[in-house]
Amino acid sequence: MNLKKEMYEIEDSLKQEIENISHYIFMNPELGNEEFKSSKYLINVLEKYGFIIEKNYCGMPTAFRGEINKGSGPTIAFLAEYDALPGYGAAKKPGHACGHNWIAASTCGAAIVLSKLINKINGNIVIIGTPAEETTGGKVPMVEKGIFNDIDIVLQMHLEGQNNVACSTLAIDCIKFQFRGKASHASSHPEEGINALDAINLMYAGIGCLRQHITKDARIHGIITYGGAAPNTVPDFTECKFHIRAGKRKYLDELTQKVINIAKGAALMTGTSVCYEKFENSFDELKNLPSLQDIMVKNLKEVGIDNIITSGEGASGSSDIGNVSQICPTMYTEIALDIPEKCFVHDEAFLKYVDSDEAYDKLHKSIKAMCGVTLDIFTSDSLLDKIKKEFKNIK
Image 1: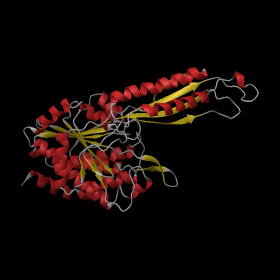
Image 2 (image 1 turned 180 degrees about the vertical axis):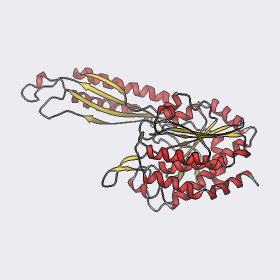
Image 3 (image 1 turned 90 degrees about the vertical axis):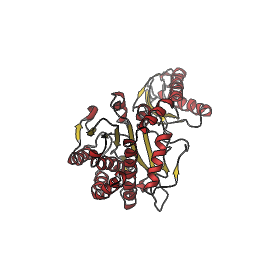
Image 4 (image 1 turned 90 degrees about the horizontal axis):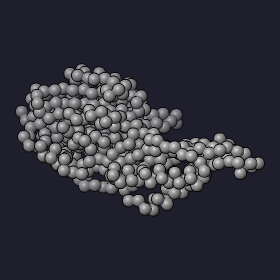
């Protein structure tokens, strides 16, 4: 039997198990680095299919790595995400409005399907549970610890508003600034005060001026997290947080330094002192490879997914998978749902669809496409070499 046809039949036979993964994660939403139920569930399912699991991976309690190894061929890794977002419904509880339940099911599903073919392929299947994509970015310390050094190809898919193999993500720095001044009575002794809130206001004004002179892909946005204790007291301490983004890390490094210089200037103008630090991990931009995109397009079309975007569509958000793509060839794909209303990931309305029959339909097709890409790489004598050569040559 044709290997890819056999893979399709295996996926069909595992439909209920795979849908159960999506449903369980959806019904048990947990915030980043708190995904204890979700990671335990995924580990139990993977162990049932013969995966050797390393728990508490890279020192993160909700991270894991599972492997099934067979031969000296390529090592393909699927990255599972399973953290939820805060603030949904009347009770403002966590929810999977970004569809990470679907990501967990698609990546674990692909790994399980391929595990059924392990005796017919020369290669290794890896599934890595990566916590807290929405916040601290669990993939970042994994990259820093070199865990992708033995991986040949990384695959992951994400629900979005369109079918896209040329996704763009922005590099991001997340900086917290704290200004310190001197408190005084704002009415009786204002001359004795040094206003730390004035420093933040001047910083905002400076960033507003900077925005006129940045590239169109760049973004700077922030909030005041503490502005003072009382209106009749000159604030002696204030704090703000900023996200600074750009299409390329090199330019972002320059832009982040400009924002820091603005903060220093605001402190100088007001007589305050300023300190700053990263409050979340920095993410790099996503590095796309045309050779991998071509293979994915072919496999998406083979399972009935068409209308695929194959060239860059402008700025986007940021994700820790960008860091992975800088050191390992990565195929990150967005898949659209055919739904009756216009809504997007993170919208509360999207919660109705991420664990629906339509999501399941795209789930199974996506698993087959990712497995198809993997089999194409496993069964080709030259494809992996072509991908790796291209990866080294793309800046």
